Amino acid sequence: MKPDAIYKCSMLTRYHHALNSRVQNINTVHDLQHAFTHAQSGARRVLFWYILPLGVYVQTRLTFPQAITAQAQISQQCVASDVCFELNIPATTAQTGSGDIFFSISAPTTYSWVALGQGSNGMTNANIFMIYQDGRGNVTLSPRHAVGTTMPLFDPEIDVELLGGSGVSNGTMMANIKCGNCESWQGGNMDFTATSGGFIHARLSGPSLDSTDVEQAVNFHSSYGVFSWPFSSAVGGASVNPFEDATLTANTTTSAAGGGGSGINDAAVLWCHGIFASVAFVFLFPLGGILIRVGNFPGLIWVHAGLQMFAWVLFMTAFGLGLYYGIMDNYMHEAHPIIGIVLVAMMLVQPLFGWLHHLRFVRTGGRTVFSHSHIWIGRIAIILGMINGGLGMKLSGVTNSYYIVYSVFAGVLGLSYIASIIYGETTRKRKLQNGSLGDREKLGNTEQQAAFHRPSDAQAGTNTRL
Image 1 (tube, one colour):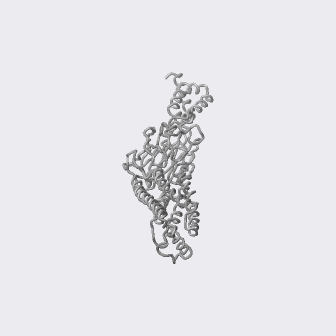
Image 2: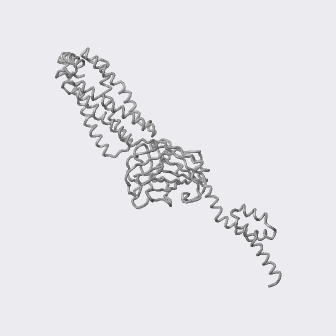
Image 3: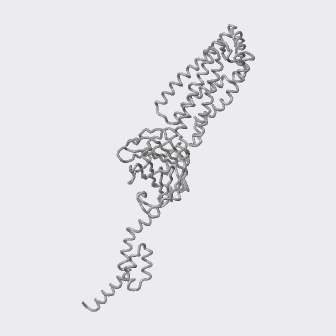
C-alpha cells in the first residue's frame, strides 16, 4: 500500500475514534449542528459529507415524529377511584377548532354501562359516548344523542372509531376513541380553541349487557355528574392513537361533581321521588276525595283528613327529592319540575283552607269561600298531579311497562274520583231542590260539632257532602 494511502487510512481511523463519542451523543439536529461547529476542519468535512446526510435522514424519519408526539398531552378526569376519562386534543384541532379529538373511557366490569358526554345543559342535547361489554372480550361503543332524561338514542351521524388498546382485561373495560366531528352535533357544539368545555358522565352498576347492538336499550343510571374539562392540559401532538404512546404525559385531576361523587344513590333518590309522588296523587289524594263524597260511616271526616295529610307529607317528601335531583342534574327548566313547583304552592295552602272550611262548616252548616277554595284546589291538584306523574316518567326514560301500570292506576282512580265528584254534586243539588239538604246539613252540623269536640262519641250517619 502506498504511504499516502496508509496515511489517509490512519487519519480516517483517528477521526472515527474521535467522532465516535460525539456521534453517540447526537440525538437531534441541534446536537448535530453543535458537533459540526466545534469539530476540527478534517472532522468537519467527514461530518458534512458522511454524518450530516445520514443524521438528517435518521432525524427526519425517527426524531421528528418523536418530537411531535412528545408534545402531546393527555388530561385525565377521574369521577371515582376506578372510573376515569382521558382527553387529547391534537395541536391542529386546538388551533382551528375542528378536527379529530381522542378520548378514552375506563371503568370496572361491575358496571353495566358507562358514558361520557359533551354538553353544558345536562342531558339536554348532549353528545354521548356509551360503552358496555359485548360478551366477546371487547367493548361496544354506542354514540348517542340525548334530548332530556329519556334514554339517549343511537346517532349514526357521530363520526367515531374504536382504537387499539380497547377491550376488557383484568376486570376493567377500556375504550380508546377517536371522534372526527365532535366540534358540533345535533343541538350543540364545543369550541376546542376555548380554555375548557362542559362534560357530563353517567354509569349504571349491574350485570354486563353482553351486547354488540349499538342501539341496545339501557336502564337509568345509578350515578352521574357534570364537570368542566380544562383543555390546556390536553392540547398537543399528532398521534394516530395517543393512548398507546408511552411517551405521553397524563395530567390528572379528580372530579367528584354531580351524583357520582356525592355519596348519594341518585337512582334511589329518583325512584323514591316517583313512588312517593305516585302514591300520593294516584292513590291517597283521590281516595280521600272519593270517601268524603260517597262514604257514610262514623268518623268519616277524620279518615278523610288523615288520608290527605299522609298524602301531603308523602308529596312534600317527593318534592324535596325531586328538587335535589333537578338542581343537581340541571332539569329545573323542564315541564315536570315546573308543574311540581305549582303543585307545591297549591298544596301549601290546602291544609289551611281545609281546616278553615271545617271550622266554618261546623258553625254555619254550609259552604264558604274557604270551602270552595279547598274543594277546587284539591280537584285541580289531583288531576294535575296525575298528569305530571306521566310527564315525570317520560322525563326519566322508563320502559313502557311502567307507563302501562301507571296509566291503568291513574285512569281507574282518576275516573272514580271524577265520578264521585259528579255523584256528590248531583246528590247535593237534588237535595237542595227538594229542600232536604238544609235539615241534613243541620244534622251534620250538630254531629260534626260532637265529632270535633269528642271524636269517640261521633254517631253513625254523620256524613255530609262537604
